[in-house]
Length: 88
Image (tube, rainbow, N blue to C red; front, top):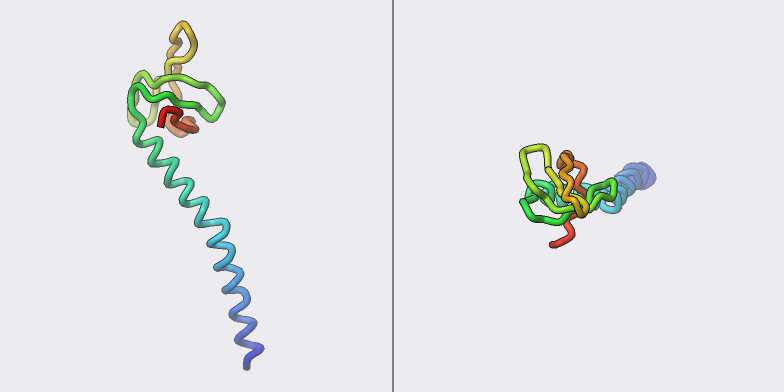
């Protein structure tokens, strides 16, 4: 019987290790990114996932208007495209 018990415990152990080393950290990172994107406000300096750097001009539910460059060009980007906030 101990061999049968070992055959059951080993896969459960591998699943637990896989969860704590891979799945849980990714879920935590996704949650932080979602919180950051939901707390965007006018005046924040942001970097998009494409590398554009600018200040937020306006925020709606799904779209963020970002001012970039010296001539203050306004670009409309979706919230999911914001990679990080620089001034926090």
